[in-house]
Length: 488
Image 1 (spheres, helix red, strand yellow):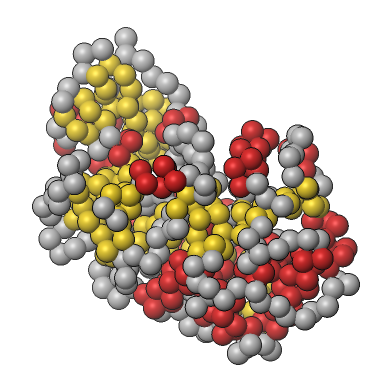
Image 2 (tube, rainbow, N blue to C red):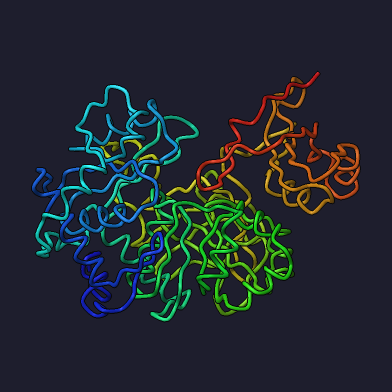
């Protein structure tokens, strides 16, 4: 099955049903279908053909949905660009993907200098698309057809383009509808950016495949989101940990009222601290469902919708996804021991765009190497310990930052924390804790707590107060941007 076929469950089967609310206006599935048809005809008139790449450098807007749907029908490969990126980062994507065009706004175009491709302004497309016929055209018939190239965050070098096929997206959507029990009766508030697979591959696809009602916003705004939830009364919300941290600041009566109407809160894109899950459950009356996915694989594991949602764990493998936990030599590790996660399944990407060596290096005997370190419990739940690249080796001891971060997050006065490696002449590396404090920052109290509960080699050498942790647009901490600390 291809994405147009999956989405036609709503476009053809629910044409008169309210589908999308944007900026105060409500559109039916039939109206969204016609908008997509007009946009597809406009892109064709502008010369786009099957296999061409189309970069889209936009914030959330109604036309973002139109453009994505049009691309999926035409076989044009959709290349979302992080709206926070600037000239250097965008130039790399343009050089790598070699798109036929890049679509952006007149304002955003100011961040481009000497673009090597045609730049189409959204304002111009808006003026032209109304003259196009609403005749449907669907060129894609093969699930192996590339649907999107999603560029990784590139924290350890130039970002690579993960090629995701129609099959990858369809399998992911069907899994989420089944595992999280989506129905046409759901109401979803989507505040995630559509340039990321969390918002696009989970949010948009679950909406269209289930036929539920969607309210799309430009971004998550902490000071307005409580009002959106109270007014729209969603049953489902997809978020990242930083959103849930901010939601804990809402008044107790507001949180309780919102919780009464909700069916499901989901967290992903970054680890959810166990303490946040516990605090949220007490305040909203819901246990956040944490899951684990990647740009290259979409969703891999999830805590169960029915069953125990275990704090700190990303749960169990999703249908069709096989998981192995291996040591550096490629041997399976025992339950309770740390290993690197390897994956196999129909959700796995087709490879990195025009990078055969990188694709080969990311696989081992047919299994995708995630780079994520994890522990599996005896009953099959996986708990992530961090990235392989985040591992701290101090005096011969392996230190997984996630363990220290979870402990520090439980301490009074700690709002957020990240633990990273710092060079040390004697031990090679030592852990350093970067803390966003609530109220007075007391490094001595944190050190004493660590000494009472952690092995000596795991105690951070320093506790550094920071105003905020550097994050990606989806809330993932960028440890390489933390201030450097040097031992005296």
